[in-house]
Length: 230
Image (cartoon, rainbow, N blue to C red):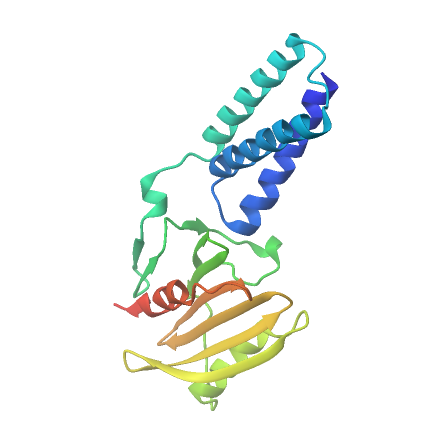
């Protein structure tokens, strides 16, 4: 029985790690890991002559626990075609953007410490890439004598104050006649690309984060360029 609990604990740990870093669905990851473990155990038994389970009852208990585990994983994160299809967001805050899959709407409070209370935030993660759009019309932006380009530079500084940022690049961009700023930097194995716009009294932030080893630049660029003002 102890063997059964240990086996499930190992599977759960592997599922959490793989689904987090590879961007796979938990149920897909679960089936994949169990399949690999079964094949590995079979080969090991053949080569090393490891004795099989001490009795049939223990085998039945493990099988039952695996079924329960799979059902729980399925209901905790159901697979739907909607999640895997591109999803377009049309917001009342004057923008449109298309995510690679179904994004979730996030509400941040003062407790998060990110200073984005009142922002409209959509996030999606898939294939090792994190996508986000955050927009606010409640910042009370006041330029005074500061130019728009300098204000954008000041807004971009908040992404660079914490942690060890490397290879920082900032250059102006233009979208629909509106001036913006693109910020790109690396932090460890993660690369971040952030586009910032200030239009009237609204602040727009479009983000893509991915691993250095990720070569799926087409999907990232497609997301960034899907953002338009409506």
